[in-house]
Length: 435
Length: 163
Image (cartoon, rainbow over the protein chains, first blue to last red):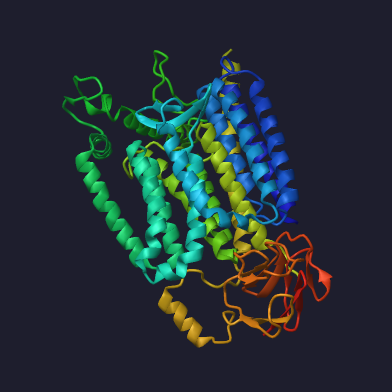
């Protein structure tokens, strides 16, 4: 079977899964949602059919599993968003249409040779920093939950950091490809431009309180440096610097100190001072409220889950149980609905996606493609780990989106561009060459 | 009323099981077919400099030593002039940013062609020139692998690939 036919078949399976998910939500909540739910599944399948046709033309030799996996993740996310707040699902569907259009546009524009992006690496590096600074500018920046990450044009909100991540990966891939031999020998002056652009990005992130993204960028940087130079020493130095820096920030910044305390001791038996209200309260009713409620939510799903559409997400008074459930915390809603079995499948899906991505990086036969492929895949994997690890209390929780699944336009668009990048790289690596 | 609600509960259970089973089948399908194509021979990209040097010392006729380009005729370069190829790609064109600069060749484009050593040999491709790149007199429409003795024409310059 040809690669693209395989992709089509996988998309049909994804379509069936989407229909099952929406049917389940519809039947469980007939009084709240309408038959529109089933049209979501049909709309979804049609949309991915379009994406598939573009891929068929632009990247005929690309990996046939990535697009169906991304489709499935967005479908599961959309189902859960629909269940949590049907109104948001419509907006998310619009964003998915935009994302697929951007995906198709990227494939189309770069179908001949994406490697010319390498010549513009410094432009990409500076663009990344520019995008990160944008939300801090007065007039267009918006602060949400203490982090200034959004820009708005009229009613449209966008988080430019998501796109900045991709620009930074292109810059790193281009720069490291060119300099990897001299970098491996450890000549300090070659690190200059690298540290400048990357340091600038980190500074902006720390300044805007976006700790999750700062962690993500740091990880991507170290991973790509390792792939390029093969020197564990650099990774070691980087990690040591990271630990020292983290400790410093932990002692100096109250916001960070609070996050670590919540992570280590989410429950207290006695009332402690609550900075949010200014009164004494148990910590689970104050700072760690969201995390603790999310843990209860995951636990109540048990082994088999409640089934999609039957999760408990509201208090008996009808208030939302967990704040920002459909963005940062969508994992815990899904864990309750799908149970341990289902959520393991979801995590497995992410792992397979990463496996395919790394394989693409291995098969690519030029340095830029290898580095870009590895960087994109690692960024995807680390982002998933940061948010899921945060929710499961493996690491301190930092707000970052769950790739493809959570509600949020910029995240969906950026992840589809990432997907387009991986498809382009694998198309080039798999294309038959005549002797 | 009770009968109907029982039916709904059962239907939801069936849907839940169907969803999870199909999800696992999907993953299994991907993992199974994906494991087949992982057995592709390839060289490691991650090499410490010392390892890379050792490799270079061991295989002096390995893919690192990939041949040379010799000028056959050119309005601007000296015939007989040569350039060794290593692992880095070489760009050919009229612009000063190229590795092989054809300053006085009016038929060459600013960015004309790229000669790129890959794992399986040296490849030539046109990078959007106006007049095209020719391999042994035939215009290139896609990248081609070079064999020793092949002549690449860029503008009015002819380059021969030698091993």
